[in-house]
Amino acid sequence: MAERNSRKSRVGTVVSNGMNKTVVVDVQRQVVHPMYGRTVRKQKKYMAHDEENGCNVGDRVVIVETRPLSRHKRWRVSEIVTRAV
Image (cartoon, rainbow, N blue to C red; front, side, top):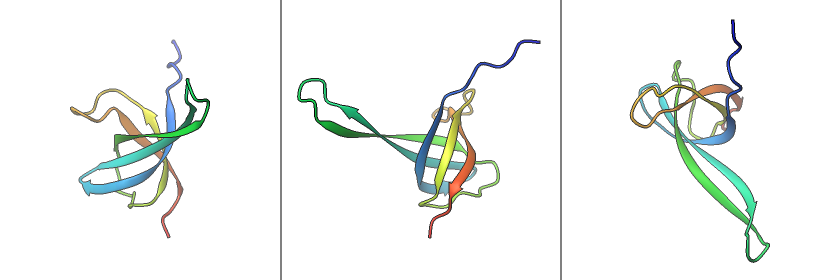
């Protein structure tokens, strides 16, 4: 039987958990500006599936790519790295 392909993963911060079994995760990354050479912070928000509703705002989580679960959800929460204080 064939192995599953390796899935993309991201580390980000939960910014919203108002929905049922869904969280919004803000992922920040640093890239070098192509013209000026300066490091620039970029951010993107992902909607991720949280089956146990265990995430709270401010938690650092790992999300992994998965099949489409709804119109906007293509990621799911793999683990909670640190809890919010």
